[in-house]
Amino acid sequence: MTHKILIIARSAPYGSSLAREGLDYVLTSAAYDQDICLLFLGDGIFQLLKGQQPKQINLKSQIGAMEILPLYDIEDLFVVEEDLIERNIDTKDLGMKVVSIKRAEVSQLINSQHKVLSF
Amino acid sequence: MKFSLLILASPYSQQGGLSALKFAQACLNQGHQIYRVFFYHEAVQTASFLQTPQQDESNLHQLWCELAEQHKIDLVTCIAAALKRGVLDKSEAKRYEKDGFNLQKPFELSGLGQLLDAQINSDQLITFA
Image 1 (cartoon, one colour):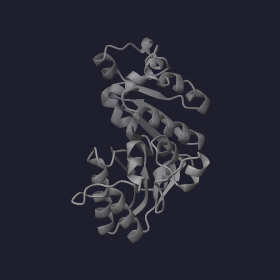
Image 2 (cartoon, rainbow over the protein chains, first blue to last red):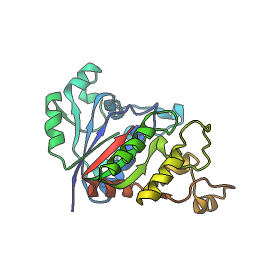
Image 3 (cartoon, rainbow over the protein chains, first blue to last red):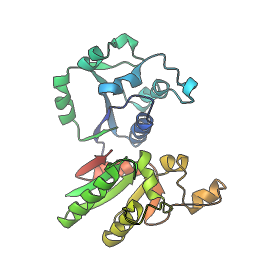
Image 4 (tube, rainbow over the protein chains, first blue to last red):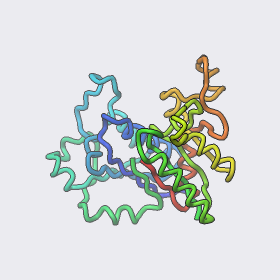
């Protein structure tokens, strides 16, 4: 049976490997035919920024790794409008197509899913 | 209820590792079932039997082994996260031509598919970060 799984990405892309290891779980779940959507919450939004240059710190690009998501049929990427404003980020600064929701709508998104996990 | 635990916390640098153990003990004491404990991120260090804390401190590896043996709990360590952090069982050590290994039963190495399986087949998956 296919489950609707929401993965909440709350970690900034570098400084901790949690963002990367969370993405590995996303790709694994999708490979097992689950219906995955992603919510980038708080500093997790930084994972989506264009123009990341992590080569200088010997790491692989988080946004580069996420370009594969549509191939896994993961197309529902949510961000929170208030998180963008608080960090002075415009959706055109982001490297993926996202749906912007209000913070008050987050609980509704979570309730619409069978399973939720956050990294 | 059927619980699974996802542990991300480093065993001795963060409280999450010990909290997870306490939570598992509390679940079992109240008659709940632990479907699986999955060690990921820094928590893979918990699986190493070489850890040697001082005698008056908790040995998390030992405590998990005792709990697992008593209650037949599945202790799964993410293989990719473990290998890069130097946590290997005998067969992986052989495969990568390493001189030693530090993971053995009741801990086992497996893939992230086991975490997905735990998430799907448990009533609750609780994360300890």
